[in-house]
Amino acid sequence: MLSAFLFVLGIACLWGGTETVLRRIPKLAAWLRVSPLVVTVMLVAVMTSLPEFCVSLFAALRGQPAAAVGNIVGSNFVTLTFVAGLCALWRPIVVGPTLRERESSWMILSAALLLVLAMDGTLSRTDGLLLMAAYFPYFRATLVEARQQRAAAEAVAAPHPWLDILLFAVGVGLVVLGSNWIVEHGSAMARRLGMSDLLVGVTFYAFGTSLPELAIALGAVLRRQADVTLGEIYASNIFTGLVVAGALCAIRPLPVEPLIVGRDLPLLVFAGVLLQLFVTSGGRFVRSEAAIMVAIFALFLTAQFMGFSISLP
Image 1 (cartoon, rainbow, N blue to C red):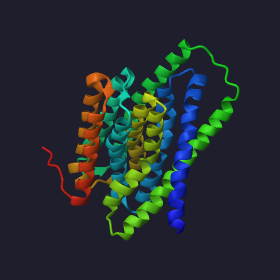
Image 2: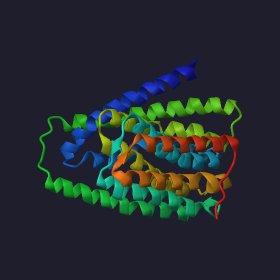
Image 3: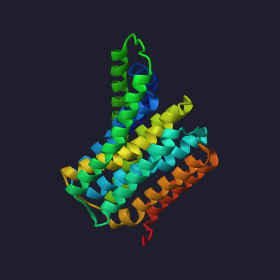
Image 4: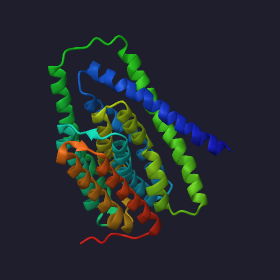
């Protein structure tokens, strides 16, 4: 009963925190004189990646490296296919030039780099440093864009900016807390069903730690904030694939299961390339394309439970 109560309470915290965050993004963007996309990339995406980092770190420290790596790969795949597809099924998304040219390319690069480094079966400390170093050019490009926007925009008088900052932080905290409760009690049920560490990592952990991204992205769709929707998905994938994975490897080298190298990471790269083709073809992510992404997510889930792999050249 307690687990069920905390699971439901986690959902309530998740959606309450999401509403608080989304209400503050335009206000913080106006106060900082930058676009909502910059706020999403530099603040929201980083903070909503905290569940992936925490869950994977604790799994690695408990001697479950398969669950730790599986959570990172699975979470990125869930956000890229299911979350993006669900949002576009609800309402087609107009994709701006910055998302098409920068975020989507970096998202593919982060997945491809993780695949290349994992091919030897281990993510070492050196690999972790390389992953984190690869994030710096992306962060720098976003920072330069923010400075240019700030220099071109006029100062906006915000009556209570620090209150908005505080409420933004509280909202992100509620999102992370709610996600943690959902993951903890959902994975407990999975273990009672006899699921392996890898299966728990790429399903329950991955889906649970993707709930902040789902909540933020879907809420942005309802508010018609297109840049926030895909910006959150792309930026979260980039941060998780480079910084979260890199930091975990720097703390403790992680062995990578053959199924992750031969199946999950290639599917992640493929999904990223396919989404890139969709958003660049017409500047819109429409329902028919979203249905394909959701179908790929269904294929991914089937692969987890059926255990089949994809042969690499």
